[in-house]
Length: 237
Image (tube, rainbow, N blue to C red):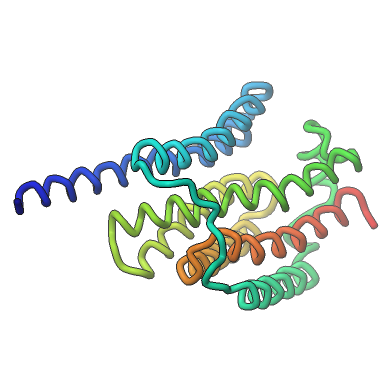
């Protein structure tokens, strides 16, 4: 009986590790293809394939491999107020940091030169991209990084803070790679530090609420701040 229980636990651990690995590499593959190798059309194809991968694999793993029932991650434990408060505070920090350091870290001309080849200097296309990033991509990131990866890290390592910190680190990595092509090394360091702290906050909000919608609110508020700055630099108010 003990041996059977041990084998089941070992199999569950291996499954959690496999699911975690397959899901965690998708964002980095997309960023490396697009920014490091600048693979053009291939990068665009990989971008969409990895988005499907990021959504489809966790769902497949949860429903088919683990045979769990469908869940809509409802916020039954609350947490909306603390998420809104933390989101507001992070927005203030983002705006203050940009006001104090923006000119030294990010050039409007440099940003335009990077975004122009993919059409993101066009007002309508940029607006659509902003809506996508705030209302779709941020949900997808909460679904992947906070729900699936944090849960898998819980299964692998146990504990409370270690899964939070590790998921925040993984959340930061692909952003750091992408940011290295947009801003200075100092700017990348500061932004990556902010992303890591934000990732910890988002993961903590998920762990306390067990709903992706609670950290999504704070995440979306931060995206509004970031993309309003990007709009100011690229399109202008």
